[in-house]
Image (spheres, rainbow, N blue to C red):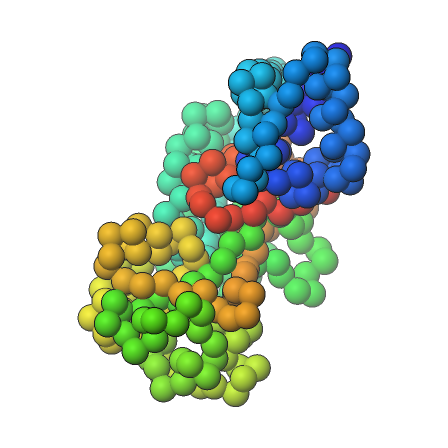
Length: 307
C-alpha cells in the first residue's frame, strides 16, 4: 500500500538521480530506501527504475507513480496552507537579503510562486551590497538572509537549501584555456573580478588562494553581466556559481574551469530568527526554493534537512 513517505521518496529520487542523495533527503539509509522501493515493486509487480550511466531512470510505471507523488504532495501542501488560512495565520512580511548576489538568477520565479501561494504576505528584496547581511536580521531590517551557514550564531534558525560548484571564468583566449582544472598557482598574477563584498565572503579567496599564499589584484562590478563583459574583454577572471555562468558558456561567450582537485563547492542556507522561522510561511518559502532550484538548476545538490 502506498503511503505519503513512499511518494516523497520517489520525488527525492527523481530530483537527485541517485539513491544515496535521495536517502539523505528523506532521512533513510540507502539500504532502507532500496528496501522501500523493492516493497513497492513487489506489491505492484512492476519495475520503477532502470540503472544507466547517468543515474536512475524511471520506467513508465515509475513515471506514473512519480506523477501521482507530485500531485498528491502538492495537494497536501495546499490543504495545509488552507488550514493555516482558516486559523488566520497568513498575513505578514518577507524581506529577503542575498549574500549570494548571483541568486537573483533564480530568486524571481521563487518569489512569483511564493506570492501565488501566500498572496497576503508582502514580499520585498532588501537592495544593495551589505558587509554584514546577518546584522540586518538583528536590526529588524530584514527577515531572511540567503547565504552561507553562519559560524558562531547559534541563536539563528538555519534552513538548508543546496550545495553548488563555483567555477573559474575566463576569456576564450585566456592562457589557461586548455587546462581542464585550475589551481591557486595557475591564477597567480591574475585580476579577480568580484561583486563589491568583503574578501572573507569570496570562496575562491578564502578556500583556495589564501591557503596557497596567492594574492590577486581585485576589481569589482555590481552586475553579473558586467563581470562577464570584463572577463570576456580579458580584464580578469571571475569565480561564480555554475548556474550563473552556464548560459554564457553555452553561448561561447566565456570559458569556465573547475578548481582542482575536486572542485570548489559552496552551500546555501535560508537564515532567520527563531521567531520568524516559526511563521507558517517560512517553511513553505524554503520548500519553494529547494523544489524550484532542484528542477531548474543543473549541477546542484539539495542539502539534507532535519528529520
